[in-house]
Length: 306
Image (cartoon, rainbow, N blue to C red):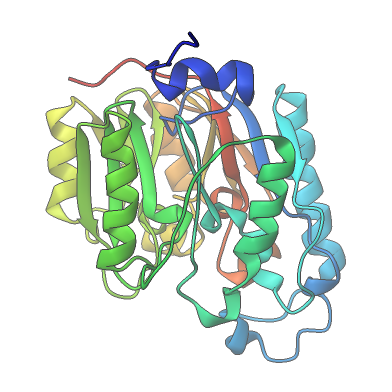
């Protein structure tokens, strides 16, 4: 008589699929997915139609991306690249929006912005090629960008809703998270004029977050304060516009962020955070920075915040 397994999927996942999974924004980063700009970032004539501020210099974009990827590799992080892309989809370099990683695999997004629809197919193919299990592809009338989700710990995930994540998309993702044992799915309304959670906040260390106080909803403050977080207010609105909040933690208390934000850097360093600054001025012309370019595939877990 053959046996019937009732083991949780998470027990079989490492052997069957590999060592993947994310349940934190700050656990030591092990593996990422990125798209180095190809032909799709060349020949743009109408940046507004692509949700960009101005046209890119493709060579400069690639050089700035290469610096980030070299930095990741120097810190022991595996960099996986989306190999192919539709040549009409320049925003694909911001692949954080295409994949939201969970402890049990990837949720493939369904972009809200019409100019980005279809990018997710190429991300899906690459994730499958890597062997990462697919938890869900957002379907039906759902829309959801990967940057609408932000992990605090294995039991707590903030979920932003608004122009880039509608009710159907929110409920699809929340269902999967609860099915994995996530006890606290925190709804956060994205302020008007902003796209994602990383538009106004980032987690930079255990119990430390950087937040634009004038924009963050009460649910953000309540969630962080209940868990004992120190909240650093972004000290300068011009630096907020310079993507100071769009950072990536390499490990707890060590982040990479764009140059040009000295007041924010000073506030972070005062709180004990090690800051690496990288020139992303060309990349930011497309309305994104390092966090936007980086889809996390593997991070170490962090202790639960109680």
